[in-house]
Amino acid sequence: MRCKHLYDIPDYVRGTITDEDRAKLDTHLLQCSSCRTEAQAMRALFSRIDADVVRKPDQTYWTNFRVHVNERIAAKKVRRFASPWIVRLAVPALSALLLFFIAKNISWNHSTPNRIFSHDELTPILAQTNESDMIYLDELTTLRASDTELTEHSTITAQSADDAIVAVETNLFSAYAANGYLYSSEDFFSAEPSIESLSSEEAEEIIRQLGNKL
Amino acid sequence: MIELSDAEIVAECKNGNQLAFNELVRRYQEKIYWLIRRMVSDHDDANDISQDVFVKVFHSIKDFRGESSLFTWLYRIATNMSLNFLRRRKLRSFFSIDTVEHMIESDEERPLDIMEKKEQRTLIERAIETLPEKQKAVFILRYYEEMPYEEMATVLKKSTGGLKANYFHAVRKIEEYLKHAL
Image (cartoon, each protein chain N blue to C red):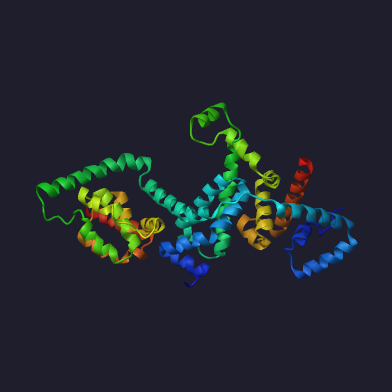
């Protein structure tokens, strides 16, 4: 018959039991030969397992780990916004909408609030947050800026690549850019102070609201 | 710099603080990686899954109600994702000819690479690999992580008695494997 203490033996040998239980098992092992044999075998086995050398990743791996996680988060967001059916349906619709507004701005209506922000306009606003937020500019200028602005942008660097990715993740404006929205200066300035405290849902809600204004 | 508690990190993450999320990753990346690495016995797979764990954490932290510790919650996600991966890998191992051809043509890992990787594993890793999935999780959480049974019960949704029995049988199976491998 199986001893009722048998299942306690691995923890006893490994030392992962309370002092009280250990004392009880010490006494029990003096009387129970099957548990004693089991404990002996497990002691030998655990020494082997502990001596096992598994190849470990180096320090660079750990330093870059966070960066890779953030890259995945960013990529997933973009994918979520641009899943195949969205791409098929929304992109042509958005393109048509954008063309319509651009044409409207150029030809007839110069007083429209929707416009492209230049590098010079964005820089002081972004400087108020922190250096890593410069990546916002990357998103905006890449999608919206003129060649001159892009050239200027190429000289801008975030504090570190890590910070840059962090900023992309949390930034409302990168979400705007990923969605291809244009927004008014009013929207831009009023949204700016709350960038850091926005949750993704709040950001998406603002994006939706802005989208409705277009 | 003041070290934030786990609860403070969670609260900050819920407010969208990316620096807090980065701290969460830094704090738990190694623990999560090793838990998964032991589950799947391969660095590349472990790397892939552990990164996905944190992506999931990033998106789900708003739903984390703090009923368990952050650590237990992370372990539950990591364990479940590893178990799902192992199930998928098991299914994939029943290759059809079409699948093999597809894998040879594509960038996916080829059967030969998989075999080569298997050979690089230590005997202990191979022994652990032979355990049934849940038993493997029990062994890893208890042996390497020294997780209390009560906490494991939360992670694996099993009774503490069942976990103790599982742990014992896992140890026995590893012992048997090593005996025959010599």
